[in-house]
Amino acid sequence: MSTSYDVKIWDIRRNQSSKAPSYEFRWAVNRRRKSRTFRTKALAENFQSDLRQAAKRGEVFDEETGLPLSMLAVKTAVNWFAFALAYVDMKWPHAAAKTRDSLTDALATVTPALVDENAPDKPEPLVLREALRQYALPPASRQAKRPEAIRSALAWLERHSLPVRDLFKVRNVRLGLDALTLRLDGGAAAATTIARKRSVFYNALQYAVDLEELASNPIDKVKAWKPPKVREVVDRRVVVNPVQARELLTAVTYAGRLDRGRHLRGFFACLYFAGLRPAEALGLRKQDCHLPQTGWGRLILAKSKPQANKRWTDSGDAHDDRGLKHRAEDEGRPVPVPPELVAILREHLNEFGAHEDGRLFRTSRGGVISIGTYCEAWKAARAFALTPEQFVSPLAARPYDLRHAAVSLWLNAGVAAPDVAERAGHGVDVLLKVYAKCIDGGTEVANRRIEDALAA
Image (spheres, rainbow, N blue to C red):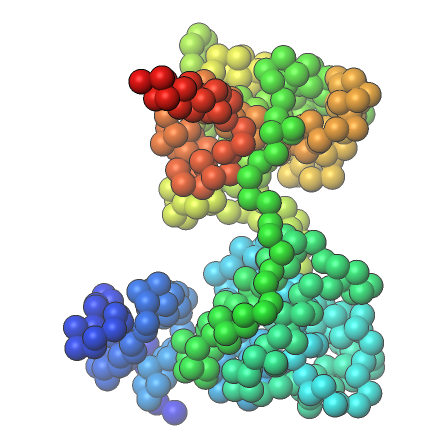
């Protein structure tokens, strides 16, 4: 095999020679030109992005096929199990910790289903899942010592996994889709779980299409199987008003041991007054904050600290160190903050200071606050601040609902949707779709306009 690091990638262009719309992607390895045609520009862009990422990581490319070795491993996989391992290897280096978690979770669900239905001595589902999730799929775990039951389960998968090319048959791909709908105990999986896992399965099959192992994505041919609908809009019952939000922020100061509640007050205030995501608030640093004595301040968000299992992070820490969601790696997001939040953050810095790296919110030992810690404090604050009827309702049931309340407040105050989207870190279309049911007054305005038109 001849390989080279000399890779040149050109822009995608519309194929003018075909009647149906198609797009050509061209690249060269050691001056040997390659090209591939795709039905849509999005598919071409996905393939182009994979090659760019491989080149950026410093991978060597095969001159004959034009593919980086990681993609070549996927292409030469003979069955679904081998394909799944190679696909994970390709995705892993540039995937966030939570993405890695979702990736292995979905593949550990579908892979045991994509086997010869007549294969004897199938291992127990829990053993197969453990073998995949803990030993086979995470690249760093493949050299770990394996118990006999795990070795036997993985050997069984290697022998009986379906060939990748057999997945063009609808009845075979349905085996994987049907597996997504069930929990290990046989009960029905949640709609959000099914949608998340289906997305991973679809993407893996699409990658097989990109590598010309399949002619088209077989999921597109499955007509009788429909995923359950997922709620995509915020339930207005979770949204607190300003009075309730302030009562909750006061109540949280009484929650937890020692001064934990007082320390977390500023964290929760960032979610409500600035609309930050919890992971963004955990990454907030003193140098990101402009907090004048009077008037509005400004936060320049730069870091995010999403929590994930240590198994999925490169550092081995529970919290990933990431850029902002929906932004380029080093792109910040400015968020104007009202005087009330400015005062709360100034009080926080005066009482607790900042960590040596600038973080405002941290544990007593300087670590990143866990989801369990701040959710426990929030639960206690709700018990203090809300009536018994409100406490058992969805009202501000999760800390994230403070962000929902912030965005809803801005929209109902008449702030233009593009400005709200910029502050919240959303796209405008997603913003209006997600918060459609939290915007007050729309029905009344529409009724008046229709009434005026009828009277004309």
